[in-house]
Structure formats: structure tokens, C-alpha cells
Image (cartoon, rainbow, N blue to C red):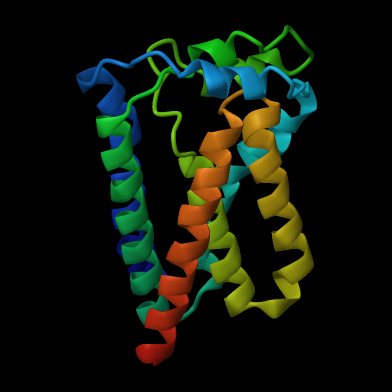
Length: 196
């Protein structure tokens, strides 16, 4: 298992980029049409719980996926997907401030505050939360079919949580979902080709 954790930790290391880019790149205002669409979406405070479950999902692959080859392939696909998202952040670093301003005081405000750092009001498009959740969730379903219902539910909850907690605009989540799905198909193709 240690070998799988070490292999997968390359992806965990890649996630650091999410916190570095906003320091180096100045954000730009979000287009009005995106803000207008999100003004019709309600803020649902308790959805921060499934939003936060993403961090739990990040540690599962080396525990559940026993194949060293599959862990390496999954790690690589997640790294490529993350780098693709980062390249979009750098080209179009839209600010998420206008949606974050819609977060209201609630019983779980302390959790909202933990994931909303003052300097991290950009990197909204696409949602890496959704991209990574879909890739990992579907890869775990491929590995253990008995996780199918609970994993599909978790993926859906994380998807909806990203914009219902106002951590993202709806367009961020939709585009993140597309990247995640096509990245998973690439993972599946590589897994079949390199089955051990």
C-alpha cells in the first residue's frame, strides 16, 4: 500500500498549484451573463458538507485500488486534468468574488470560512472540485462495483454543492464535469490497454 500512496502522492503534490496560481495571476471580473445566471440559483448552506467530502474522496484511491498500474494511470490522468484546469485559470482567471458574496451567515459558516481563503477568490472556471470528483468517483466504481450507488450519489452531491454553496458559478461546475467525464474515459481506455 505504501507504494500506491507514494505513486498517488504525485497527484496530491500537483494540487498545490491551485493555491499558487492566485498569488501569481491577478483575477479579472466575471462576465455579467454568468453572474446573472447564478443570481437565480439559491444558496443552500448545508450543502457545504458534500462539498467538503471531496477532500475525503482524494485519499480513497490508494486505499481501494489495489493495482499499482491502475493507481499510476489514475494519478497521471488526474495530474493531466489538473494541469489542463490550471492552464485555463492562467488564461482566464475570473474572480469568484461576486458569487462568494452571496454566502450568508449560517450554522456551518465556520466550514465555509475554511474553504474560502481571502486571496483565493479566483480559479473559478472550471471547477476542479467537480473534475477530480468525477474522475476519482468513476474510477472507484470501476474498481468496486458495490460502491456504484453511493459513489454516484457522492459525485452528484459534490457537483450540486459547488454552485449551491456559492463556491463556484454554475458554468464552472458544468465545464468541470465535462473535463472530468472525458478524463475518466481516457483513464478507462488506458486501464484496459495496460491491464495487469
